[in-house]
Image 1 (tube, rainbow, N blue to C red):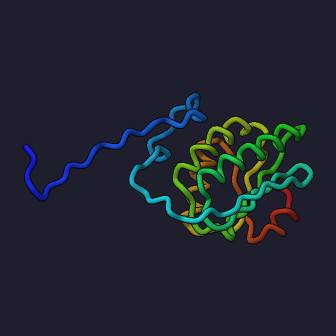
Image 2: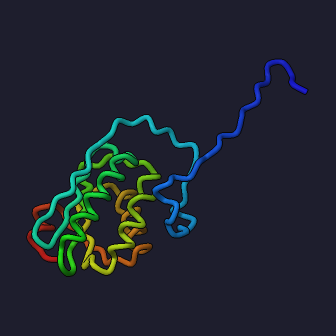
Image 3: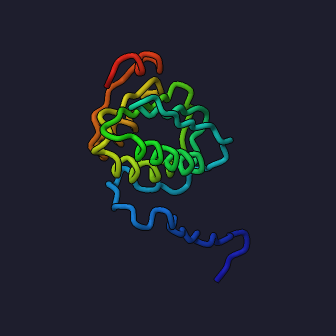
Length: 157
């Protein structure tokens, strides 16, 4: 029976991302959380290679589309480097991120974990650094921090 003035909401059907069909089961703190508004404008995630280092330069809002593109570029560079490499993640200009974007990063980082010598984290808020350290724990990566990209590039990790 439907009462006047009361509207019923239809449950949303969440379809799994086909790109993540073979992804390993993630710990509870990395699982998707429903209800976040994704109305932010896209930011930018540049992937650059410096000899035996790969740098991710993030700014603005890290949307899931940015993560998809960046993980493809990161994997391409990681496969091209013969031997271990350092991953530098510059969060200095990153404001926020889509929670689902990490679902693209986790399997890629786990895939290349044996090749990543160290993850050097540059800047970022306390929440972003905490998220990065949790991802490193999940992927089995050693992490260090630097005050600037210049410092991270000057000292080997």
